[in-house]
Image 1 (cartoon, helix red, strand yellow):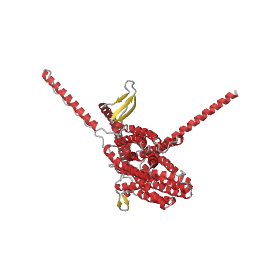
Image 2 (cartoon, one colour):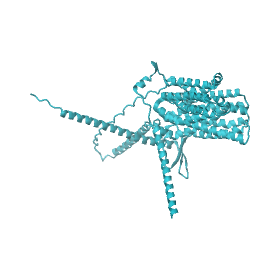
Image 3 (cartoon, helix red, strand yellow):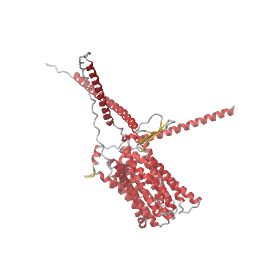
Image 4 (cartoon, one colour):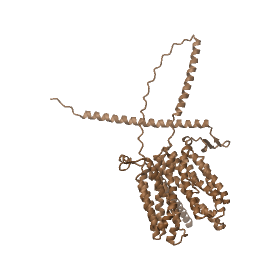
Length: 619
C-alpha cells in the first residue's frame, strides 16, 4: 500500500513537473513573440521642422544635393571592403603571436565576425528605420574603427582572445550598421533610379576588396601588423564619421488632401403625367412596345459601358503600406529568400579558396593566383553595378531568371572543365560566376523596394542578408567537410578533380532549387493578391498564369484561363473597393458627426454666455 502511494506521489510530481515545463515553454515563446512584435513595430524616424530645414544644407551654407550620396556611399563601402581581405592578416597575426605562420588561429576571427554580423542584421534593420542613417553610420563607424584598435592591442599583447572579442564582435556590429545605412538611404532618395542606387550602394565592397588586397601587403612590409591596424582604424574612423554628416533621409511627403465632402442627395424627380391611352389603336401599341425594347437595349448598353469604366477606375490595394511583419512573412519574401540563398551558396567557397584552386588544381604560381583573385573582384564589381541598371529595363524577376539560369549552366560545366584541367575555361567560368553573383547581390535592394516599399527596406534587406550569411557559412562548412573527408579518409591528392566536382554537384542542385523558385515569385499586385477558391491547397504564378492545386480526385491541377482570371480579379477589386468606400464613408460620417457635435457644443456655450451676461438697467 505504501509503495502504491509512493508511486502515485511520484506520478503526480512528474505530471506537475511536466506542466511546469510546458508553462515555462509557453511563457518563453509568448515572451519571444511579444518582443518580436514590439521590436518590429511600425515606427518611423521623427524629425522636427527645424531639423528638416537644417538638413537642406550640408554645412554652413553649402546646399545638400542627393547625388552627393553616391560618392559618399562608395567611400563607406570601400572601408568595409578591408574586412573581406582579412585572409591577408592571418599569417602575420599567427607569426607575431605564436611565431608560427601556419598556426591557423587567426582565421577564426573572420568566422566570429560573420556570425556576429548575421545576428546583428536582425536588430539593425528596424533600429535604422527609427533612428536614421546618420546615427547608424556614427555607431557603425565607431565600432568598426575600434575593432582595428582592439586587434592592434590583442596582437601587441599576444592575446588572441582580445583579437577574437575585440575585432570579431566589434567588427561584426560595425559592419551591420555601416553596410545597411547607405543601402536603405539611397533607395529612399532615388525612387526614379532604384536600380542604379541599388548597384552603387553595394558595389563599394568589391572596390574596397580590390584596393586593400593590393595595398595591405606593402603596408605590412613597411610597418608591422600592430601599426597597420592602428593606421587602418584611424583612416576608417575619419572617413565614416565624415560621411555621417552627409547622410540624411528625404523630407517627409506633404500630408494628403482632406477627403471630399459627401455629395448631398439630389431631389427625386416628380412623376410626369401619363399621356392619355387610346385602346382602339393597336398600331400605336405595337409602336410603343418597339420603343420600349429599344430603350431597354440602350439602357443595357449604357450599363455595360458604365461597368467597364467603373472596372477601369477601381483602385488596387497598395502593398507598399504593408507592415514589417507582413512583409517578411509574405510568400514573396520567402521565395526571394530562397533565390538569394541559392545565389550566394558558393560565394564564400569561391572567395576563400580561389587562390588554392588555381595553385592546387592547375599548378600555377602565387602571382598568377593573385592576378586571378584580383580580376575576379573586378567582375564582381561590374556585376553589382551593371545588373541593377539592366534590371530597370527587363525587370527584377527576369534578371534573377537569367542570373540563376547561367549559374546552373556554370556549375554543370565546371566539373567537366576541372576534369580536363582546362585553366582558361575554369577562370572564364569563375569570373562569369562572380559577375552573376554580384548582379544578384546588387538587384536585391531594388527588388525589395519594388515589392514592399521604401519604409520597410532596411528591415527587409537586413533579414534577407541572413540568407547570404547562412548560405555562405553552410556552403563553406559542407564543402570543407566533404573536402577533408576525401583527403583524410580516401587519401586523394589536392589536384584530384573529385575533391571539387563532388562538391559542385550539390552546389548545382541547390542553385536549381533557387532557379525554379525564381519563376514562381509574383511581382504584379494582381498575382500577389489573387483570391483563392474553396478546397484550394496551393496556388502560384508561372509565366503570368495562375496555377492551382485543389482537392479534386479527377482534376487536382488547374491552369486558370485568362477570361476566368480577369473575372475573378475584377470581382475581388469590386469587393475591395466596396469595403474601402464603406470605411471612407464611415470615417466621413464620424468626422461630420464630430463636427456637428463640436458646433452644437459651441452654440450651447454661446447661449450660456449670453444668458449669464447681466443686462444694464437704465436710470
